[in-house]
Structure formats: structure tokens, C-alpha cells
Length: 297
Ligand SMILES: Cc1ncc(COP(=O)(O)O)c(C=O)c1O
Image (cartoon, rainbow, N blue to C red):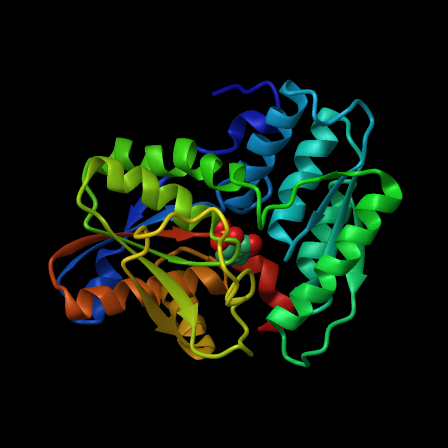
């Protein structure tokens, strides 16, 4: 198939059934993984970058040549860097230093700039306090540069990108889903996909959260409120430790899916669901690729 540019190959990702893993854990039911690293920036965040920037241009909120800025753990920065590069906008990412160097390098490779904010925690993850420091610098720079802030943590379009994209694609492929589990950062994919699935089927939607504040599941687990989440959307939380998430990452790699740590957390969340509720059809996202974490494993 021929495409005009890399923007056109964002989305429409494949769903892979994880039968071998379900069997190995001696469980009954089905887990389907949506391989979101099949995207030019190798993560699900390309979707929100494309959706938000194209909409801002259409609505004349993003002016010609204006700098785009975002506070990011890396993947949204990578998505925005590539979208902005294709569409001709300068981009700057404000990141906490605990995020892996691979993601910094990718943003730079796509022509974006990176502002690293020193963090308090020593582990290879990012805590809520660290996120607050990043937010402060993000606000300062936005003002200084008169930049267009993407603000994925409060921007509803983050969820709409997944509602119209990821959620719809899951329904197109599976028709009905019993359970969706998702490790939460901004909550964009959890909210957007859960809303879309609940409209069409009797789907239970669970958030995957880390066991403690200091964890190494990069990309989320900040214990922050999701401002665009409606009441009653979430049916419960499933706790997954950093060690379990890494185990999940290893299990995925053994079946040919080299996904990142938060994808491992999603898998372990799905296995916990099947343990307590056998014979269900569970969907997870493989958020990004394992190659982005080589330096922290
Ligand atoms: C690797 C990874 N996993 C999970 C998430 C959380 O996704 P969301 O922000 O949609 O909740 C992110 C967000 O940056 C991420 O980069």
C-alpha cells in the first residue's frame, strides 16, 4: 500500500490474540493486545499528537510557525515531534529526567527540542512531585515562548483521539468486549476507549495502577485525578507492581511482541482479571516498544 506521508500510517493497528500466554498461566479466556507500537513514533501517543495538532490548525488555534510545547514522559513528545516536523511547526518537550534517554533521542531525531527538568526521586520512574516540577517549567516556557500548549493532562481531545480511533478500531475487529484494562497516565486512552466500548457492549473497564508511588512503570502511575473522566466510567482498579510489569514485558517478548514496561503492566492486569473472572474476552494496549527502555532495564 502507498501513503502520501507518515501521518497516514498512524492508527489502524493490529490486534493479536495472546492464547499461548493465557495457557501458560493456566487460565481460561481470551486476551487481545492492540499493537500500538505499529506507528511511526512507535507508540499509541502518535494518535493524540495527530488528532490535537490537526484540529488546532483547522480551528486556527495554532498559528503558522508558532512553537508547540508539551509536558511529556516522552511518547507524546515523540508523536508531537514527528507530527510537527511533517506539518512544519517547531516543537519543544518538557520532560522529567527519570524518563528513558531513548525517548529524548527520538524527539531530537524528529527535530524537536527537549527541556529536561531535574527530579527529586532517585528511581528510574517519575513521581507526582516530579510531575509537578515539570508542570511548573512547562507553564513558564509556554508564556516565555508564546507557545501553543498541547496540555494532554487536561485536554479532552486526548481522550477523543482514542474514542474515534483506538476504541472504534477495537469494536470493528472484535464486535464485543467483556473487559478493558489500561495502565493510566493522563487517562486519555482509558477514558476514550472505555467510553466508546461501553456505548456498544457490556464492557467492564479497569484502571491498572502501580502498587506504590515510587515505581518504574514509565508513562503513568502518577496518582493524579483525570479531569475529563466521567463518573461511573471506571469499574475498579487492578494493582500491578514494577516487578510484575517487567515479568509481563518478558512474557510478551517470548511470543514475539517486544513491547514496553507499561504494556507488561497491562498484560499482568489482564491475567489478574481472567484469574478472578474466567472465560472473558479482555483487551489491552501494547502502548509502545521495548526498545525505548534498553537503558533502564
Ligand atoms: C508507555 C506509556 N504507557 C502508558 C501511558 C499512559 O497513557 P495515557 O496517558 O493515555 O493514560 C503513557 C503515556 O505517556 C506511555 O507513554
